[in-house]
Length: 397
Image (cartoon, rainbow, N blue to C red; front, side, top):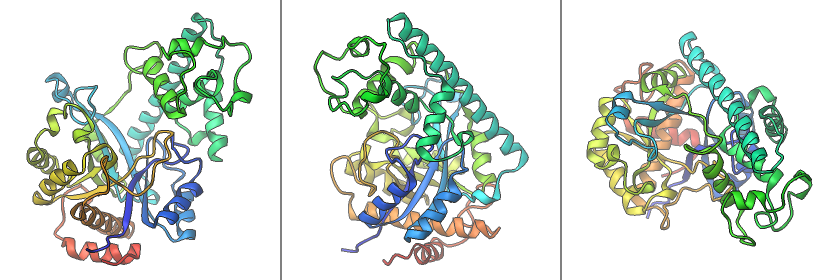
């Protein structure tokens, strides 16, 4: 059996919401697990990327750069087709792999991403205000503002507050840290951060958690999001997604490979857009998306293998990550929901990561790699790209 090195092409790191408290903690975990390459894949702002690159180089971990967008296909939305977001028809997550942060963006892409960040910041401000008003109506004083939460996030990550763009999970954590009753926080670790003027069981009752039932921080914060921040709840404010074309253009403007995140049996039932692996692969090729990624911990191993084989047959590369965008500090080494990945999947994910590494290296030199500057597949052989990427990462096959 060939021992393919572990790689991880999708991790969210601070100031994005992350299971890791810092970049150094994530890289220490990569070293401990033998993960050769780690790909940061943040929403909204990439100004922390140079810091990540320097820290990774210091510990011998190859830094991959990516980004993530939420897009909306209005035709699919009108038809009620769920893509890779089971709750929102037409909503499609799209990522970019092997971007070149130093290249920046063309004026049009910069304007688009700037508008997305501003819209998200406005959304967060409105959500926090709505949650505070709702909690006040329930007899719970919660007077934090979006600015205060952002300042706390910035302090935790040791970054300028301008780099912070609040996500729902940031807000849920702030609610948890300030209002969690003993049943949600049995160790009392956050007691010093709680506000004194609260009803001891108010939040517990609001979340419909039986008295005395202990939950982990991840479970409690998930319950807070579900009860206070998601669609149909008091704090919900609609997102302002990009069109698919806008997100695609932003990825290519930064030199990256447009990449489709596969949900598959991470949803039950599987979203119709993804029901057939072969048809999904053909649709991605039609859209000039020549890469797909898995967060395999949400999938059965057999499902991962089935989709990987379909994508490979269509000429796509595949990669794998863990996201780490919840409080759960799971391993960095990608694994399936029901155990280790198969040899075939590990080989495919290693090969995909080497191609991304080679593409990133070539794009940084102003050259075409796996895809060109318009996102089209180039004629460069996968074998040559994989060999270059393996050399860059420092692994052996």
